[in-house]
Image 1 (cartoon, helix red, strand yellow):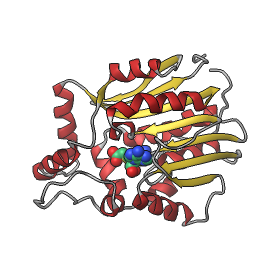
Image 2 (cartoon, protein in one colour):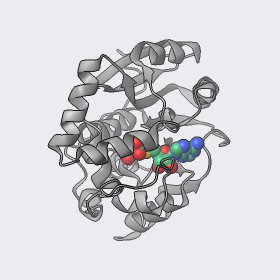
Image 3 (cartoon, helix red, strand yellow):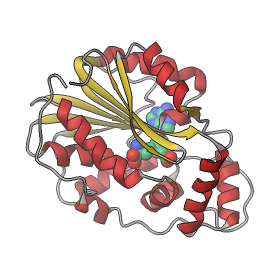
Image 4 (cartoon, helix red, strand yellow):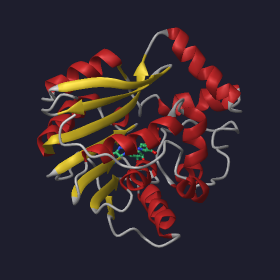
Length: 262
Ligand code: GEK
């Protein structure tokens, strides 16, 4: 890989961020309720760490590895964007992976509830001056000079027609030695969909919770296949795209604007 740096680190989840995020259990869909579209509001933000850990197979592996990938591309003084940062898990993974190296992490989310919790969590032991928490719609955000862009589990919430324009914007904002990390739920064979439901059941979600959440997400989260992602990233101008993680119907991609991996 060209223009990359090594960092001394581990693939364990960040213990401090992990502990700080000791969130109440997600019971949002446990009682029968009137169907409304899923929103990243205060109720979701309050249980988010528990919700995402019990719902997304591989999340606890993808987050620290995302930090390692980003850190390899961040020179001293480099800039990383965490788009759809929620409570800042990937941002903390990047900081952990870069150690003391100076850098700038711009953590962006359009949910006021998520961002205020992210800020509060980050400030618990004193804010890291390298992070800026920004409330914005990532489609309207001006980006430049990006050495790493993280877009984990967020593209799937944009209207499909907005996805390619966003990826083109990210490609244009990345330096030649930069990297995009993209994680998503994927359209996949029925057997993986079924196994994903088994994963949720094994993590304590009831049939009612699973069914109600699925209905709430129906108009909000639309997933693409692995092939669609690969083709769209190429269309957006990335020279090299690889799948670096797959677990059932979830996956993560790495895309390089110019320099193919070594
Ligand atoms: C993690 N990356 O923990 N602009 C800005 N933010 C948005 C937009 C938008 N247009 N649309 C959605 N979001 C995180 C997890 S969660 C994934 C990401 C999930 C934000 C939204 O507010 C939410 O915080 C995040 O994207 C998606 O690794 O909950 O499945």
